[in-house]
Length: 191
Image 1: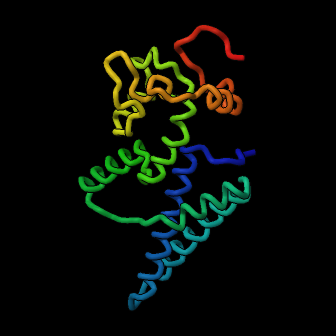
Image 2 (image 1 turned 135 degrees about the vertical axis):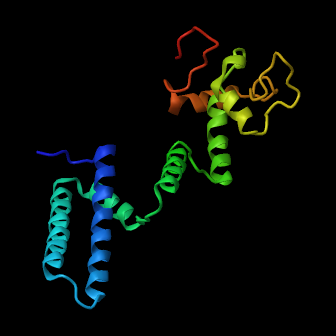
Image 3 (image 1 turned 30 degrees about the vertical axis):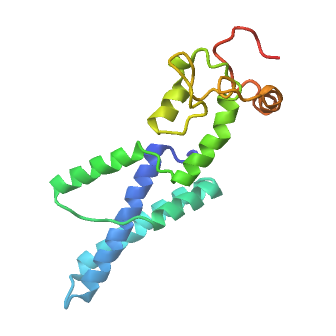
């Protein structure tokens, strides 16, 4: 029995098969418009189109309904383009780069930072900030610092070092994220 969900490789294969169905469908329509299409060739082309469609439908019937809907939605956005090989390789490289990039609106990015910063920087003592991946991330994307007076020994994102009274805030924040957020500056276990 086949898996009920697609692996990334199978999703890619299914997308290719769906693209082939679209290409075949267009080819059939174009050949039907010609004056005298070869009947034998048209028979095999239609048969190929039907068999490929049946194979895809069979696989769809074996997967989870939500996975099938997701794949159908993705397939509706497919566009098959034929280009010279050199240009195709360049396009493939561009797509591979896009797969490595998360596109996020500035508003969504700010909302994300606004949610995460108090939960990380609000409970951090700021002692080990030189090795903080989150601080590096915030710097890289030029997120506004919390402590504008930070010097070389102070984390610019540490609420406590910025003079904020976070004692009650820390207790409230730690509860829902207990075990997720940890301050690498201390060796004492969390309560």
